[in-house]
Length: 143
Image 1 (tube, rainbow, N blue to C red):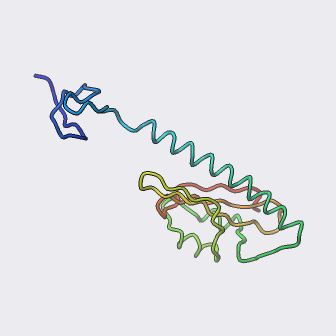
Image 2: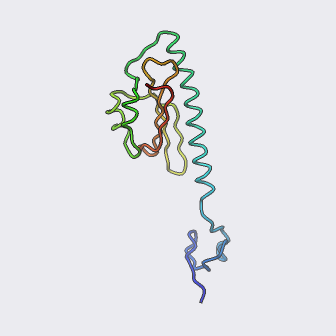
Image 3: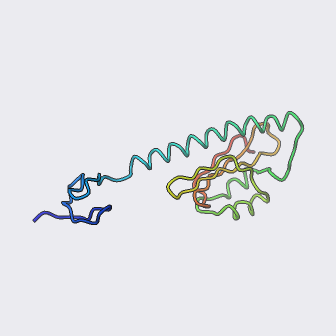
């Protein structure tokens, strides 16, 4: 007796090894490729945001602009953990970050916020939030 599963589109019982539903003719494979593309996009956006913000930090440092409200230290950066909310992160740092990037796809919102390092030209930290939960962080030149 062959094992069966339900088609996720038309809810018809189909053989477990079927790749296409015999009733609605839709493909029954998973979304592994979609998740790979989404993760590639997140990493790419993070890299672009870091590069753009490094340039912005250098310009602020050269022009003498110093907004202490956006500074982050390595000690504060190290306290940020996956799963924290934006509010918890801003409480640690003591300031709001600059929103560098926002992407929404398939009900998932990804936001990257930037804080600048104090004292080192080009230093900054980016924190990635997925649906208001930390999912990644990166820093350049914090001391």
